[in-house]
Image (tube, rainbow, N blue to C red; front, side, top):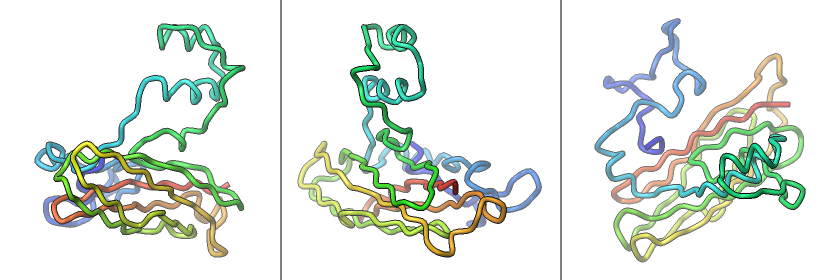
Amino acid sequence: MMTTTDIVNLEGKPIIDERLLPADIFAIGAGHVNPSRANDPGLVFDIQPDDYIPYLCGLNYTDREIAILVQRKVKCSEISSIKEAQLNYPSFSLTLGSGAQTYTRTVTNVGQPNSLYKSLIFVPQGVEVEVTPSTLQFNEANQKASFAVTFKRTSYGGNRQDMPFAQGYIKWSSDQHSVRIPLVVIFE
């Protein structure tokens, strides 16, 4: 649902916050729900309950606490923990220092077979973003495809006092669908 939302109001203007200023991503979230597009999203990001286990282990939940959630035994000592940005979410929220970070997402085509999606990046200020591959070709419904997104701070990426975070998005567009993935980069 969040990949099909609107980030402008009905007049085509930016959504405003309680101060009547253009809302940032923390105020707007994914945007306003668009029911007709949500009913036919084109691409979906699947995630299974077990995909959360390495993330919960990384948050230092105990084996017992996680076992209660997933209804089976878990040994975090045998599982590599992951960061939130590694979950297969239709968004990215990450803390970025001087090094590059790359994350992978997998999408399922729930739209038309024989669809070609092209990526367009609305780059967050102070960040270089690369999507690989830049196109996704689907030959059938329910086909899966993966892409990687690399984030790298640029020389004009502000400091925490001047610019604590930057926002942008990636848009995957086909002839019939537009799928928007919000990006939030918090600077270290």
